[in-house]
Length: 132
Image (spheres, rainbow, N blue to C red):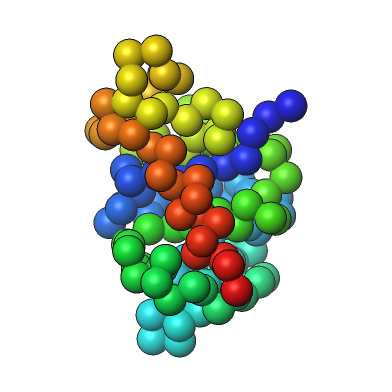
C-alpha cells in the first residue's frame, strides 16, 4: 500500500501548486493568514474552495503561508502528488519513504535541494496543523 503524502521544506516559498491540481480529494491546503483559515481548491488558483479548516495556531505559525499542507486524515494515499513529474522541487514524499538524513534512510527526490535533511518532522507537523 502507498503511503500518505508529506510536503517538506523544499515547498517553502515555492508553493508551485501542481500537486493541488492532481489531488483527487483536495486534501492539499494553503493557509490564508488574513482569514486564519486553511483552504483547498478544486484547481489551484481557481478560487473555488472545496474545504476549509481552522488551523492550530502554534503549528501553522512555524511556516505560515509559505508552505502547502496535506491533511493526513483526508489523504487517500493515491500517489498522484508525489510522482516525480508533479512537484518541480521534489518537496513531496510518501510517509513510508521519508528521508531522515541518515546514510541508510530513504532516497531523496532528485529535485529536492534539501538532501541530507531530516524530513520526518513534517509528518507530525502536518498532523498538528490540522489538530482543530
